[in-house]
Length: 336
Ligand code: TYM
Image (cartoon, rainbow, N blue to C red; front, side):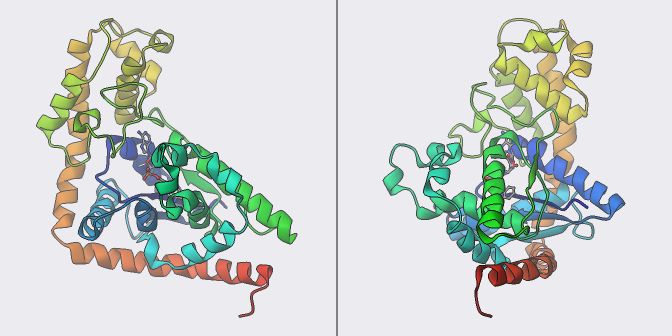
């Protein structure tokens, strides 16, 4: 049986990238889990968020907003386990063990570390450096086998595999599973609307570069209208998107929102100019996203209910994580 885990940082607003690359896939997995009888676990990784400075009030709000986003997108606390990371201490306890398994060199190779720390690595937090070790613990403390993520997290999942393998080898056990990254769909890497070579990100200084899940219809339409494109018409086949990063991105977004393949989309819109395609995309995006943002706003009116959902999820999560941690301590040689 698979077991599915994934997480999102409450480090800012949710973007269309988070939604298409991760949250929609979570909902698919939740439903599959329900049918086939396996557990799906989705986390707000607040401990990861504080690897860079977060204002405490903002962090609380963003964590609740992320939970609201999960639920508004179709995750259901009756079907999947939803909780925030800091409530299940087993994550950080296992992360310490993994800090002693993982090598400095492995962490130094992480592109997210290099990007986020920038030129002044000496001034980055130790937590930012150790980030992938905590992420491995998030996953392996549940013995999760499948981790749905966007393309940018692939390297971290590979590191998780390396940690599992080294732990098993060092202690001569067959304990931690070797996890599969699950990177699926037409939008595994949603790009900035201003620059087709950059990922759409909540930390981009330009708000015009991203669509936020809380944007209203006017903002969504305006951002798509102003999105960078080239002057050519859309091609009728995917080959024709070669070397056209911005065009490819908008087509990918359309395909993911419409639940179609890129070829299906191009069969319909091939030959159209962007002046015609962009309003179609805006209309589709508003139709798909505005019910979610309306529901998020409604849920945010009852923060106590959100907190109760997270507390309940944390209890269920701990019931799975605690025995795994105990067994890990036994393997390592800790007296209990
Ligand atoms: P985070 O919070 O940056 O992003 C959450 C999820 O959204 C995906 N994503 C995207 N997908 C497509 N296009 C984009 N532009 C885009 N931007 C973000 C990410 O790939 C991710 O799936 N390290 C993780 C959080 C994490 C985690 C975990 C994930 C912590 N522990 C354990 C899985 C399992 C992160 O920073 O994601």
